[in-house]
Length: 259
Image (cartoon, rainbow, N blue to C red; front, side, top):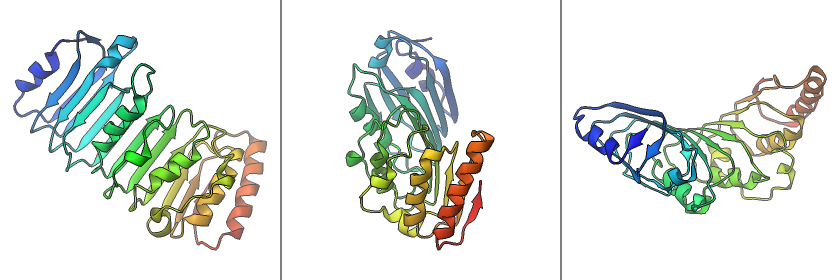
């Protein structure tokens, strides 16, 4: 359990600190998580926030040469992140809390890591506002795990407009996330037209067939498509593979396909 300004006092006495991890930490009388270190390269924040009062903290991070950033917690009240120009990889897992403006706070968190090259994002809904996001020019790998997608297929397409140079996309959706893709009538993101070469869909469900069709139709330079049917029963797997192969036969792309 962290008390008062204990984090700031600890870090201020570690002048050459490069690797810092807080795992399953709780708070007591802590209003601000303040991490300022010019030498820090790897930062892991996994906060155990089980009571409402814990969500009122603010997060301040000033680590200009940070290379790896992991943040697993509920959305905080606010975030102030310095420019992380050296950031290579980020692993963000956030959940909502009703007493704060989750969308605004989550958006500020994602804005602070806009230089990242590889991003893994887990949310219980599409809780940050793509309309306020910058362009992630450096992002080439994106992994999205949606725990409660709630019909927000358009959110993913909106986000892909923010990552023009994306090369690898990994998706792990709830079972019903693929049922409404056929109705999408949005401008195709430029990364699908020019850069996206590999797509992986984990835990494929037969209801995701329209999502696969969307990517086959619009990912013009796609080279590799990996679809995991391991979670299906034998009969479901057989039926899904028949439908997928029918889609692939209609596609004019030369693909390496792994089922």
